[in-house]
Image: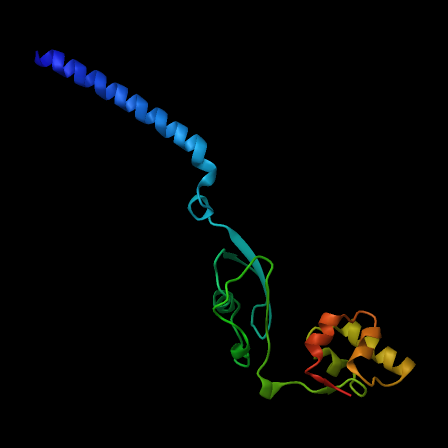
Length: 169
């Protein structure tokens, strides 16, 4: 009698295990693509950091990272104006974080009298664009407003926005 009971119990357990494995396989086939990315793999993003940091460049961070995280990696300089940056902002792939200097160290350059070295100090202005500014000034005369700088080869609206608080006429 006990042998018969054990035989039934053994058969029941075998069937239960087979059914459980079958259900598990079906579940995985149906729902495997619905597993959140955070569980299946950590998604990474790339962020560019420049300006008043010791190590400017592109950083790869986990999705959900914040501005503060990338600034720690890039080592912010002492003269960085962190009050103008939202350190708690979540980063997205392809974000650019530009760290500006404190206002007390703000550059003021007269674009009509500045030499190549002075113009090159402006944020976002390369030596090539600085040379173009000087050549344009020599050919057409002094600039009277900021919009005239758009006529300079290599100068964009974004560049003007970036340098507008550093220049005078």
